[in-house]
Length: 165
Image (cartoon, rainbow, N blue to C red; front, side, top):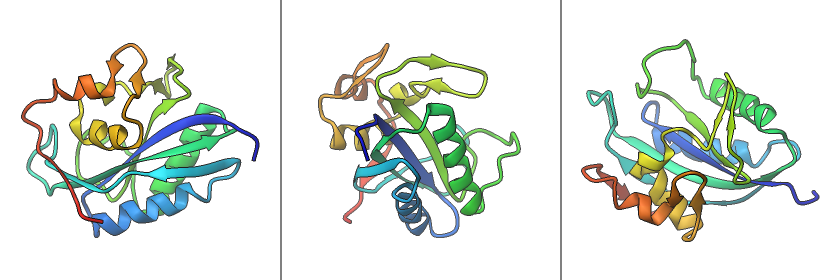
């Protein structure tokens, strides 16, 4: 595949064997058309943010190269979520889920449409995303926010633990 856009996708789950859900999500990312899975982070366990009366989440981030447009890639991510049993019904944000895939970054582009905002609008304030991002790209800069490593310092009080994988 010719070189495409560098993309980071966040994965998270806290229902129906979340470790297996996240690993299956990684496998599905590797099967996307016109896309190459380059590397995935370790798995991380994190306390829920927002809706706290639910099980801990398992999180990871994967780096991809893709020729898919951002909106087309997002639709493919929704398809992977549906295949994992996820139902998007405008329910409570941050609630429990079998698999959540977030398009975090797409080639350092800033984009705001009714369907998609890049970079992901809360990425810079979520330790469970920043830790695995930094593992993959220690010098990564989040457009409009700065270095991921510097942003992590502001994420106080968020419990995140790297799992042995």
